[in-house]
Amino acid sequence: MEIQNPDSDSCFPKVKYWREDVLYQFQGFWFLPRHLQGTKQVLDQFKPLPNDVILASFPKTGTTWLKALLYSVINRPSSINQLVTNHSHELVPTLEMQVYGRPVANSPPGHFPSNTSSSTSILSTHIPYQILGETLNSSDCRVVYVARNPKDTLISLWHFENAMYLGQKSEPQPLENIVSNLCEGTVVFGPYFEHVLGYQKESLERPDKFFFITYEELKSNPITHVKRLAKFLGCPFVGEDMETQVEEVVRSCSIETLKNHEVNKSSDVPSWTMMPYDAFFRKGQVGDHMNYLTKDMIERIDAITRKKFHGINLWG
Ligand code: A3P
Image (cartoon, rainbow, N blue to C red):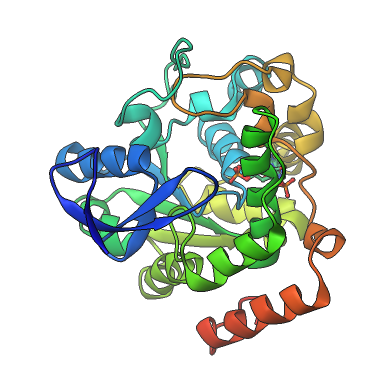
């Protein structure tokens, strides 16, 4: 159905999402109005510089973790102290929410300490490659994409969105609904599968520009993958104490370490989101979906995962 989007002059198809939220379809993907406005500004105004590093991800796939890792790898060794006093999302702002777009809460804006001590700016985005590709390809900027298996991503999203609404004392969203949202593609920045495929395809064709990593790979062998990441970014770990340096980065960015910093325990809500700082750190485990999804839900998601990711080695 074509309707007038209150946040723009254009007409977009819309669907009902959770509770009173509505998603608008823009260039084949689904957006909340506030994200759509920021996305259009990014497309109109953002010109990446050759030295920029852009972290791209679908929501709830490990963005907060990768922000900390990218910041640490690029700005080491001084980065370690910055992570103690700054939330990862303030160190690496999200283009369509923090750099562009409009505030969503009446709280003070998050503060952005100098993004980096080097000449590299690190920025992040949830905008799909199918929409942002032309912008990303307009300079020699490098892109890191983190993907996570769809079932854990879904459960993480469910907790995150429920936390937002439970603050308003409402019931959790039925899991059946969000499973349908994922399978039908009507989820924030979805369809999930096309989101992953857009960046994954580019990483195969242009591995010097697009680095693709899964949450699960990083969890199972962080040392190896952080070394790969540093090499891709042009700042490899070198020297006799190289193993110690990598271990220090991995440790300082682990969920166990980050969760214990006061700044990450804070229930303050910055103006660019509706969620408190502490909501970005939950369990950080692989396979948590098994504690929530029924056998039928798992089969439904697995079937579509096999279909969509047929021929590529991703959770199929
Ligand atoms: P869970 O909800 O499964 O615990 P995003 O940063 O894209 O919003 O993703 C949030 C997910 O990443 C949450 O997963 C969160 O707990 C997890 N996470 C946050 N920081 C992490 C870290 N340093 N290491 C591993 N996982 C982390």
